[in-house]
Amino acid sequence: MAVEHVKNLCATTRAKLSEAIVKMEEFLNASSLQLLNSENDAAMEEFYKGYLSDTRHLLVFSEVSYEKLGVALRRPNFNQDYSERVLYDVYHSSVNSFFYPQNECYSEDGRYAYTGQDAIRFRKKPNREVRDLTIELSKIFEELREDLAYYETDYITQKRMQGEKI
Image (tube, rainbow, N blue to C red):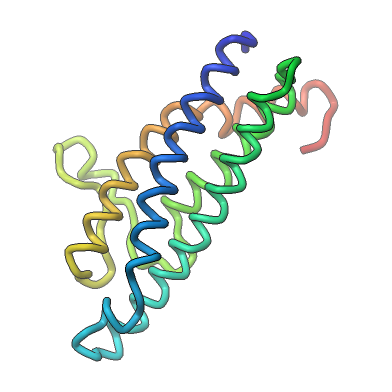
């Protein structure tokens, strides 16, 4: 890929991650298990525990990627190889962590993507705040997934053809 394209992709990816980080931090700073599960329902408590855990993991992955992109963009000589590796990591850590959460509190149903409806389906019905956050994040991470689709397979194929191990 052209150096300017990679540099621009790093900048836009960093901006989108920044937006997602702010939303997750605001939610996590204002939420607790007791606030989310005000009805003291045992099944919902497990759901919210998993949701909060997945959101914390996603926040950490996103912050690490955000910092690495900042390093790539601040270097006096733009290092394309390093930057492409960071973009690959963004796809495989942050984007995949959002769409495939460890606790599976929600999942993406691709059949709804073409209907204009939200493609996120929850395992249990969450409160409005959790639902809204997840839908907002899904829009950001969907854009990132589309922007970084190259790094899903082509980047690895290119590196393997060059004889490098990933």
